[in-house]
Amino acid sequence: MAYSRYNLSNYKTMIRVVFLSIVIFFVKSMAAQTNSPLPVTDRKLWLGYLDKIARPVLVNLAGNTLKENMPVVLSEKVDNKKARTEAAYLEAFGRTLCGIAPWLQLQECDAEEKKLQNEFRQLASQALTNAVNPTAKDFLLFTGTQSLVDASFLSLALIRCPWLWQQADAATKHNLQAAFLSTRNTVPYYSNWLLFSAMIETFFCRYQLPYDKMRIDYAVKEFASHWYTGDGMFSDGMQFHLDYYNSYVIQPYLQCIVDVVNKKDSSYQALAPTLQKIARRYAVVQERMINTDGSFPVTGRSITYRGGAFHHLANMAYNKQLPAELSPAQIRCALTAVIKKTLDAPATFTEKGWLNIGLCGSQPGLAEGYINTGSEYLCTQIFLPLGLPATDNFWNTPAVPWTSVKIWSGQDVPADHAVE
Image (cartoon, rainbow, N blue to C red):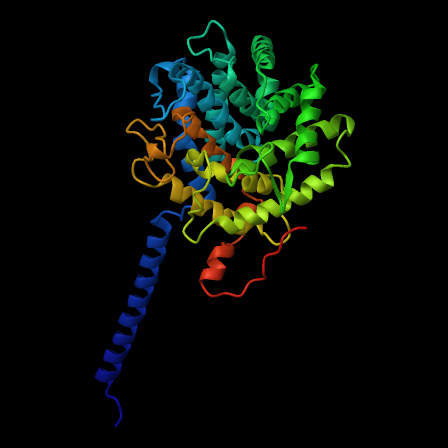
């Protein structure tokens, strides 16, 4: 049956209505996409956590109010209340600065990140000046046993961020040298503590200042010649301990010390390949310890350092020394899971933003006698890859699963083998 003129006109009207409806739908969809916030990238997520953790420490020390405002909560098993309280402030500062130093040094940032970085650079610079100024309210304690530990973290921070040393005025540089020299009065324990003295001397070496090479050589050779136990791990002194000290201190410190000294006189050139082989194996071990949800085995002392347990893995990624079987994106995703797991738990922070003692929230029972509020800031070491620009493969490649995710989702993966 032929259409009448009326039916044809009506049909055309319907077509127009449908077409306009489709156009309106797509316009609204595009508008909604335009107005909706962009997804938060892993890098922005990490920067948010860094800001939250580091800001109270740096703002207060820069303002000479760290001792006034930082709550010093001591372990229930505290071994020396007075000494631990006095040392807590250098612990918080040295460890915080050490973790964020590569990001402070970074030259390539977008405008938004650069604004945040410039703010933190100024805070860190002023905090450093106050920390070593004998006339400042927040002049920090550099003498005593615990101060050796955290002076070493501060010296490592300055090695990781030359900008902080280069822009410091003459008085601050003088005061820093005096503070570091005062730690020579403390004899380190025969353990990973040898590396604390060695790192401070490495700072002097890095900036062409007189240094005690014996303190460096003794530490390096004890680990390289006597304390390697096999399969990517060193013992902590004469005994092997199933803890995270290979990551908290031993391997990141050894890598830095050997690298700095080799650039000066090639003392450890023959040793470097062996240490690199060990470091790569331990990076594989660390990656496999991260569970599907970002948790990891709770073993050994100092477990309340949270993400600091992966200082070594983060350092290997930052220095672009990961073994071939570990992709940068894989490590980014694994470390992001650890960050969320250890920092998102309720009661991780006090109402005023300071870290509580714990691994997953507030868990004071996990603390050894030397743990206090300041100790907790070793967790910032997981943020080292922020020293890589956003254009680096670590940040700009698509997310991929790490080993535990692959295995526990049924994927087939190559078997793990010891390095020797």
